[in-house]
Length: 503
Image 1 (tube, rainbow, N blue to C red):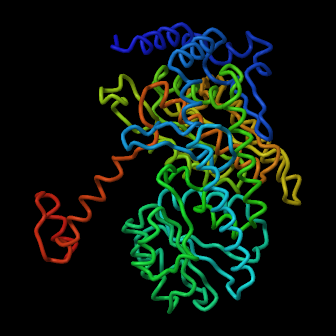
Image 2 (cartoon, rainbow, N blue to C red; image 1 turned 90 degrees about the vertical axis):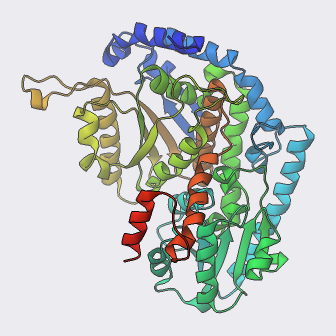
Image 3 (cartoon, rainbow, N blue to C red; image 1 turned 30 degrees about the vertical axis):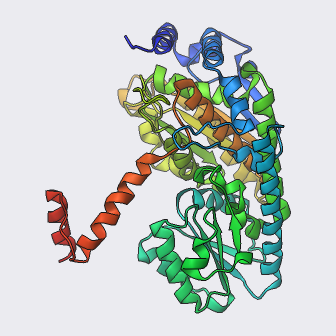
């Protein structure tokens, strides 16, 4: 038994439902396929193949209400201090629209509009220049979101400006990124909230030296003085971000400048509008009809109730192949916590390991384990209804594979040959976008953001700090002198490894 009564109740609900095979839950409820689905703007999601029934869902919604989900959503949009460990609001929604009359949120939206005007002017200036290529230098939230959006939304032909990304501190990454580019026709964006991130500063130094001068260096930061001090970047080429936007929520701010440069500022604003449409739905819709709430409570059911330790993201559109990378940070950095807001231990698990890839490629790599392995892995299957590619037969084949895999996961297949038997019972959610557009991608990403936040509310943890990320950075900074032969490491295993690395 747990000290958390909700966890005990959750396990009781799971115990009641788990004995019924998933295929029987579906077949016994003819209306389930339609009733367990929601459509919000360009995003449709079907939860009918999740391993719960109507009574379990009703319990989940009651528990979410009791946890204060509606009130905490309003607090998020109003700019209250939801990031209590750092004493900050988390106002990424204010980057997308003006949802609240609360002064903090309204003021933040005004700041966002000014920054957006500066973004547009920067895009226009670079489009009018001789620059052909942009190198975006950042890491984590300063890289993953923009990289995903550019890869997903760029057309089959390069736009006016080609955008490249450099994140890893490994020098080979910089070498490969710069190969084939002309320094006289390239500009660089240095993106760092604090402008103290080691990887970004080192790669920024490589870019500055490679460019030959500072005239095509731009910066996006909450620390507006550091870019000028460290790289001699003038104020007119420094775009702001703010401490009320976490890095993994920052692609909606000037951190999204690489997106605007790749697809145009008008398309970037459509990206924001799609997210705002999802924001409005999540804020204004009761939990039983709220897409983000369904997704959040499904995640809680699978991780805390059924005990599934991982979650797959399977995007059946090549343009979304980076979605699983992006969601790894969004979900695992936000929910990878073991203490509640008051510092007390969390009872139960707060997050599975998120991973995945693009179908149909992944069907020929790890799907064998998903179908016949001993561990059950819930999945989000993501498809796109209308294709932009002029190959309809390929698109039908892609859809056939998406539908087949989700069906096979759920139903399995009996066989007298145990090697050819498939147990089934693998739960999944199918999410369909009308088409892959800036607006639909914005809505999808906003849905995942709100799902993460609602999960954090349920367990009483802070989704907006990431102190675990800092420990490795602190230790690495102490080891740099040891690698240079100027100091000794304290840890005996590290000393042995240092000796090997230093030859």
